Image (cartoon, rainbow, N blue to C red):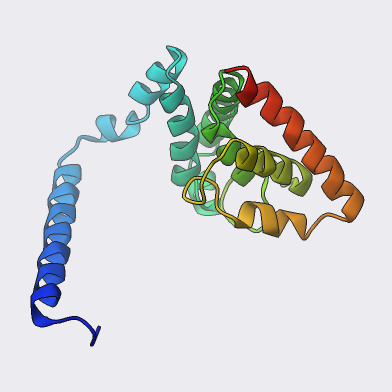
Length: 180
C-alpha cells in the first residue's frame, strides 16, 4: 500500500510475521498429535453439548460443517459424516429452543442455496430466508448473519413465498428469542 508510511508498514510486517510464526508453531504441534487424539477431537465438544452448553451445541454444528466441506471429505468417511450431521441437527435445534439467536444464523446458512459444501439440511430458500429474517429481528449483525443469507435466498422466492417466509421468520423469532 503506497499510502502507508515506513513505520506503519514495518508494524504491519511485524504483525504478519508474528501470525505466520504462530500458525507454523500450531501446525508443528498438530503434526505431533497421535491419530487417536485426532480421530476424537470433537468428543469434548459433543460432551459439553450433551451437558447443555449452548456454545458447544452451536460450535458442534459449525465444526461438523467445516470438517465435511466437500464431497471428498464426506465420501471418505460417510458413516461418521451422517452420524455427526444428525447430532449437529439435534444440537442446533436444541440451542434454538433454548433461545440462542446465533442458531438462527447457523440454520439460515444450513438451508441456503449456492454452496458446494455439505449442509445440515437440503436446500430450502424459504426456510433459509425465514431463519435469516428471524436473525435480523434478533439483531444479529452481518458478522454473524451475512447479508447474502437474505438476498440470495429472496431472489429464489416469488412475492407470495417471500411474504410467507417473512411470516415464518416472525414466528421463529417469537418462539426463539422473545421468551428468553
